[in-house]
Image 1: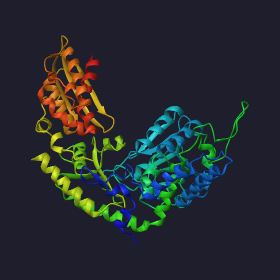
Image 2 (image 1 turned 45 degrees about the horizontal axis):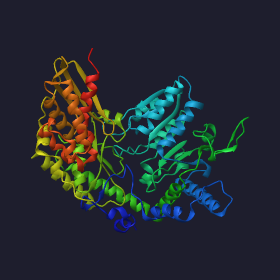
Image 3 (image 1 turned 120 degrees about the horizontal axis):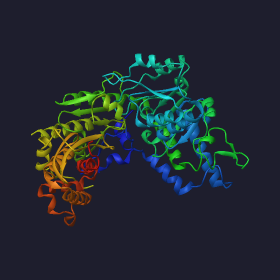
Image 4 (image 1 turned 60 degrees about the horizontal axis):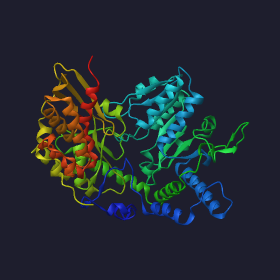
Length: 406
Length: 148
């Protein structure tokens, strides 16, 4: 049974004050808050277990290695990957996509090839591909977005062709909240033998992810948006693809043998994990996932959907407020603009009321350009948010309107 | 966390300038212009200048920006009318120091003009300092990019 009040008690920051008001945290699409179990796991690692992995023969190091590799199992189970070796720990989505793009630029792409992305991608799923295309002579193709913030599937189908070497698409738009029909997109791409990369930065915290059922070639996520620490994330890749790609970074821990006559790399996942990783971060992320499995996650998702419905209705009733992104399938992310009040001024005014929202281009400048907007205000909800917080948001927005327009 | 005073930031002077900015638009003839962006938030301002004999004769601007940036642009456009490049350089350095530590009276000098004291509240809103600085930095770039 999902009980939001008891869930809130698991997140210590939610009971703090901001500008002398109870903190109303509505910037979950940027980063989620951390439950005590995650904070404790990170702190406990440094207090009791700190030692490097894959190196020492002493017990402490062996224990660290075991915990780290167990975390890989946890993530593989959580995402239902086929093999634990298909889970690579990275710094986050940005590093994961850079790893794939770098590999494609060096080993897969040739002049005349195409990479297909969409107009609603985060910069992290645009810029690495621009660079990969620049390096390889491939061309970047863009699937447009429709007025309601959904993808133009018809054009997507037309853009897929024999030259397409990879289709990269965000699962849930961080700027609009649109949930893309990735099953359909993956099917269509596979019919043309095009592999698919899913940016799951937003989706892993809002939806159940089943990688074997999705059948995508790559799936990436960031730990800090999934109630885990910053600086840790996951790259999932099908084994055959991870074998095909060259190492991204190189050095310690990713080798079998180093010799001036030639160096032999470890097999996956070690090949992609050079240097000492973010061990405490990995353990924290694994704890976050265990936490999600311990609560009524279906109840949490259903609570988020009710929050989205209530917030949409409440915000729509504020005169002069326009919601950007009205696709039929949305996650609990609402972007909005006001006539005559810039998003930054909205953000600063709400901050004075203890409300944290994101304002700006949300690292999706091409998407905002498509809507002819320099910036939006964005409220993004997690399962620990409440209906009362939406009322506080709405009351502050109404007060703001009076303040700026009177 | 102490309370911030929203009214101190959205001072009457700032609201007035933001609502009806002076010198908004494009100059019919200009010698310099530059499109400045705030990479962090996507705000945009275009500064047009007419410079003659090492003097800024006139500035106009167009923008898609917040109240702080628009007010700063409007006040800047008034302040730089008919001043020498030398004076511009001097007030730019004063404004930069002022915004860096708005509450420090030593860093502020009346050469800017009293109305700019309205930005004192940025001390409590450090995230918004870049909004006030954007037009100033754009003007600086504009001066280095002459229209051919």
